Length: 391
Image (cartoon, rainbow, N blue to C red; front, side, top):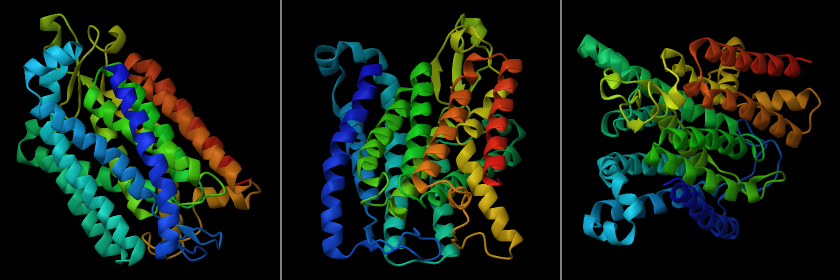
């Protein structure tokens, strides 16, 4: 299954690469471009197509749709003759086909929202409202909800869980949207974070989530061929919002804790806080007892995008501006003002994301005291970035 998951990434790359090249030509001919230079836009003044998100969407949604159809429609006897090694995973894969279908609908919705906003800005509050509706759809119809342990508190616990989940989706979606402000930045950071989650889900045997990660990473690496400095195409909101939603879903479905009663069957069953189950070693992955410290994983993997999001919102509020109105005060811009070239600023941010992400992927194999050391290391990386940008 690991090989099959990785091949999905190759398929996504092969789909997105020629699509992106074609989109550059078609977008210029149709005038689907970002001229840059304004508030919230790229400050280069170049006229660049902003439709690479279409390539990402098709590279993710196409193979995902085909895989879900094959898993659901191909009878068990055909699996036994064509791919006997996959029979043991068939039941689990079929259980997530409904979730996958719902997720495809939500991904399509956020992609269309971004595409429309790229052409005709719809206003920050309406945009946030539509994002909230999509986030609520993910939480309610895709069984992607964190902190399900609060369900034992009754309706209040369920409500709090839904509220936290929707808020998390909105923060990650907009954090990735904020990062799309410099050539290669959003693609690079998302590719690093997606690769970290890919490793974590492969280790845990969460094949559905791992497949989604592989598709995302493959598509982003293809787009990076054209989006790396100097960019020939931008993701646009149609891409950055889509990437943010995928990472938000993945981050919630790869947070693990040991399910109660696992010791009774002699095998530790690792489950995400959304309820997705995968087999692991006794008492945890690698035989290490996992606990609440694994909640730190998404905060570590996405620490740098969250740092940018929180700092930008804080700066806007301090200056009496709406946090939803774009400007050129993102972390990447601040690094450039401190003397880094834009490509070097992008490199610093991507490497910092890798440094914090590697800390996060190890959490399920660490004892609690070791996990807190990893958390301290993540904070140290963010402190270095803060010192660097302030000279």
